Length: 268
DNA sequence: ATGGTAGCTGGGCTA
Image (tube, rainbow, N blue to C red; front, side, top):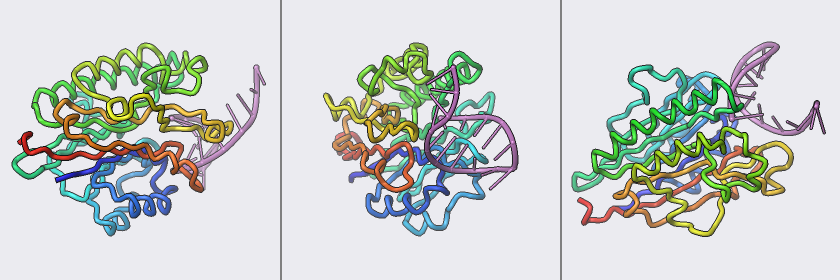
């Protein structure tokens, strides 16, 4: 059995609805993790997406943020809370489990990590605190020793190679050393960047700003990531960044990033 | 130095 999973910051699901529905009809991912849906649960276009064959798990918020997981398979063990103690005030997280044949399962975390700009600020501190909570969650999930995938808009530029000109980003929350340090801490728990693993040597940006003709100049950054536990990493066979969607009419400023997995029998 | 774009909303904030 194979399955594919995609992450896409759509920057407003309602503003992107037609483009979005066309894209899922053509590309047909099994699981699609969305960020910045920018609507309350009641305003989410459930019926049109369900008609395409997807179950919808939505953690919405009026105006800002908001995440969703769409899946052709019914998912289990859904939670919308990252921080059990403080009950996050911003909708940025969904955890779900995909049950596979032979009693196997995969834990999926769809995340919209805080932007954190400007630096320094309360928003930057919030970003770092949120990352600490994510690290705590990742530790728990890794200890379960089943395949585990964290994917979404991380708002982290991991290295100098992941941005068109890093010298312009030194004081940006996406490239500050404090942010990168926390990201490395997360990866060093034993998570592999699917892009790094599958696509060594290439630079695949995932976001181009709307301003200043960033797309035309290829002034992009790579901030949408798919992180894999060791056992998930051993199942990946396909990876792609759908840059061409940035060239569509009224596009999101982010493009979809996808991975394909082959469930290996010896994993059971 | 400033303003450049987009979404949500009906201001100004967020990115």
